[in-house]
Structures are given as C-alpha cells and as structure tokens.
Length: 207
Image 1 (cartoon, helix red, strand yellow):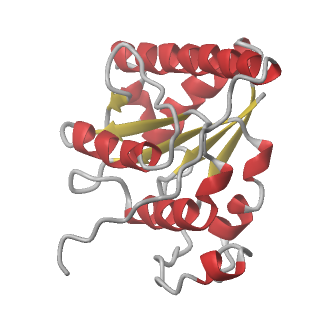
Image 2 (cartoon, one colour):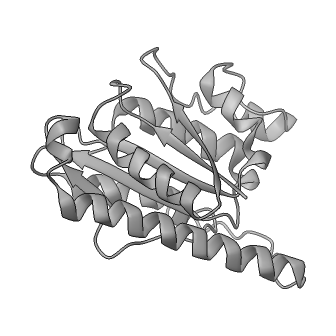
C-alpha cells in the first residue's frame, strides 16, 4: 500500500512540509509506503473548462505536474494534500492543481482515502481544511480524520516543532489512514469493496 502526500506550499521545506513529514514518518512506521510530492513554484494553470479530458479520455490537455500526477494515480491507495493558509484558504497553486486533478482524473481516486493538512500562523485553518475536504466529498472518497482538525501552527518549521498538539494530530491522522487502508485492503480481498453504480442525475435549478 502506498500514499501520496502533496505539498501545495511554494516553500518546499516550510511549515506544511514539516506537518507532512510527521504524517509520512508515521505511515512508514505503520508499514505504508509513501511518496512526498512538492508541486513547486512554477505557475499551474486553472481548468479551462474545455472538457477535452472527458471527451477524449486522455486526461488534461495542459501538460504539466497535474497531468504527470494524474497519469500515476493508480500507483497510490491514499492521498494527503497539504497547504499553508493564504487569506483563509489553500494556496492558489494547490487549488488549481486539485481542480484539474479531480476533474480530469477523479475516477482514479474514487474509493481511496483522502486527507487534508493545513498550516497557519494564527487563523484560517478550519476554512482551508474544509475547502480541501470538499474534493473528497464529491468523489466518493473516505475522509480521514484525527483527534482534532488536521492543522499545525507556526511561522516557521521551528515554531511548528513547538505545536505539540498539532504534531500529535498528524501522527494520529497517519495511523487512522493506515488503519483504513488495511480495512479497505481486506474488504477488497473478500470482494466486498465495490460501488453500486447509478446513472448520474443532474438537476438544474434554472430552466
């Protein structure tokens, strides 16, 4: 089993990275393989609403880190997306990344556990946490929780080290992810982890 952890911060080794490292280390202690992906500082274009990904089935027409990641999603059994708080929300880079990843490649993540991790100096963490979780809630992905909302506080990785509750929250989150992954793996082996499909109904409120 393998989990992809995505760092949506422009700072490769900042507070978000420190939080994800705590999750990563604990997952590995639980016997779960991990990969940490930093999306970098290059601009990530938003969704163009061209729907070419749905028409062709060949993924996003914009070829960058989003499409590269989308092509590899079958390798992973769970996902953790991390971001610092910018104006009470995740970074623009991460939101563009997730918009396109879920729209073009969401089927590859259905049924796989997802978790969000946020870091902030003081406020806005709960709003950012909620924003990332919404991607999972529209894609039939179990949302992994902890004993508190998945957040750490600090203006630097050194300050995050002082947030003992935040780091504990990260470790418990990782153990909950591992526990859920093992349960899903067992259910799959027993042939009891599949979706009952229905034709999607779209209700328009303005006609």
